[in-house]
Image 1: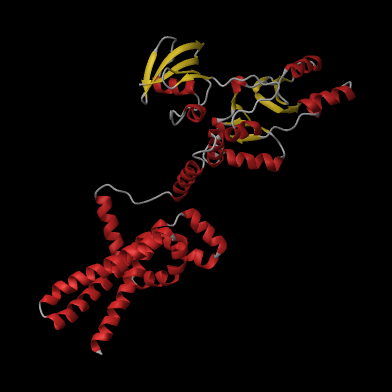
Image 2 (image 1 turned 60 degrees about the horizontal axis):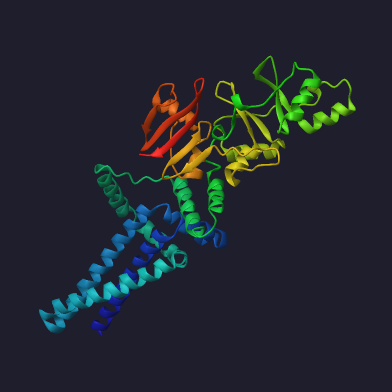
Amino acid sequence: MTLLIIFGVIVFLLICSAFFSACETALTAVTQLQIHQMMTKDPKRGKRVKTLSLNMGRVLGTVLLGNNLVNILATSLATHVFIKLFDETGIGIATLCMTFLILIFSEVMPKLYAIHNPEQVSLMVSPLMQWCVRVFSPVTQVVRQLAENIWEFFGVSLRNNDENSLHEELRGAIDIFTHHERKDQKEMLHGILDLSFVNIEEVMIHRKDVEAINKSKSLKDIRAQVMKSPYTRLPVWDKSPDNILGILHVKTFLQRMEETPNLRLEDIYQEPLYAPETTSLADQIEVFRATHQHMAVVVDEYGDVQGVVTLEDILEEVLGQMLDEHDVRTDGIQGNPKEGYKIKGAVTLRDIKRKVGWKLSHRKATTLGGFLLYEAQAIPKPGQVYRFQSFQFRILKCHHHRVTLVHVGKV
């Protein structure tokens, strides 16, 4: 009878070991996206899984502590039983039997099931695992702190940025599920993810390229400018291009000119919407939706005008370049990876990455011309060759102090 009880305890301990093994695999395999879906379907248990996933250090400490306790205890009991049955030969028999049982039933089988069903297993084990974490908390806290200190001693940081981690996870998922789809569809999904990480200064029309209306001109001259312009909205300035008074809607202007002989421009243009250059594209879309406007004047931290941004500029970051019947295609990138590319200086670094796949990064510059100015720490001249970040840049054309055309190739 005593042997049956001991064998029953051993079986129970092996089940406990299988439980800890399944917990470890499931909770490390489940992703943040899966946890989000769990919380939608089963908020109570989903919240438990999320809490455990955010405290993986304590969970792993509990799993290791629990697994070692039950495995050592089960092996000790089995050794005691087999020594009684087979004398000293029982040590070897116990070792072989327990190694087989632990390996198959307490490690491989539960982990194999958990790795294929992380959501289901996580939801199932989360209540009991949460209780175990509380019980073993004093010991696991010491173990966790000791382990983190050892890793930091070797220069390894275990801190993780959850937002960036989720962002990269989503990008990876897009790459996997759109592997055989069109390239533009993949870029569109990546563009949506990037809306919160890209500032409007990276997509705005720079002040030097902004077409605007001088308020001091006659209505006849303004009408002539409007008729030639491909834009539906134009900033209006007075005395200085930095002094923007408002945004003129072309259609409204032409309609009112027909109806009102003595039209005053200030009666029809809208108050300008201002946006700091550090505003994210996602935030600016919300502003456009709230104000029912499609254009904003971009200013720096001192309030100086840097350019304008439109809803179309932001949408092009997601959908790619959108041309209407008045637009002229100006991709600004020509060539191939083998021979290199001729790229206009006004092309943004993001467009180069999107269209060519080459990553040029700089903390301040947003265009290729600005990148070369900052990296060279001088005014580049035609014919000069630079090498930065594993790329070779040959200056082809300049206009005054601006780089207008560059040949870029891999070094």
